[in-house]
Image (cartoon, rainbow, N blue to C red; front, side, top):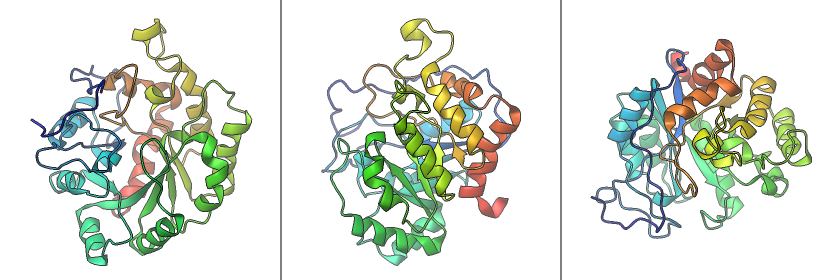
Length: 305
């Protein structure tokens, strides 16, 4: 049992996911997921904004196999701050089937970066969602980006759509590939060709080093899953946004479960249904091959290409 008490009202991940009806291509990669603790082995950060349920590497790898994925990209969650111990432990026990995206401070040493690289780390995450993290000076983030660039790493950014205009100049001067979490969190009540999402599309149009994850329909949707509203297609209101990026930037998109789905408020998704949702945003086998195999392998396992 964890030594920590969960945030009141915390929704635990769904322990009985269905088996997906969609057959994934061989070698498919879940390119965005997390491990939490267990808190008695990998304590949560004192500065955290939330305390989650435990979600161990063993449970993540079991889900990977159940859903039909071959590999994972594990992203450092804010509840662990810059202590990447749980993530690095998962990489060390993945038999080469996982890569990592860490959070570091400017005090990180070159030896530490090299050790993380050897374990499978290939990126750092910069979080700009104010309700989740405290402000980090941009000169510190730019210094970190410059230090990881020679390693061939990239920067993952998480932000709210309304903040993109303010962050534009910073993102477009980063010296590495830039991977945007969850399509920049669009407001799906607005049109795909509206000013807010068009700004994000323009970012990708004008900057070929920018990628996007087509993930987290459960986090972005207003319509919700079938269990909430009887809809035959889960998260239908997110589909036009994800499909637009899939069709416009087929070689710069990724997909991930976001397991164990931190900080959801109204429901916890069935990960099997999330996999089936891929068929709505990447309806052809060729698109699914790019989204789930070719693109993540090029970014995270280029030595195997």
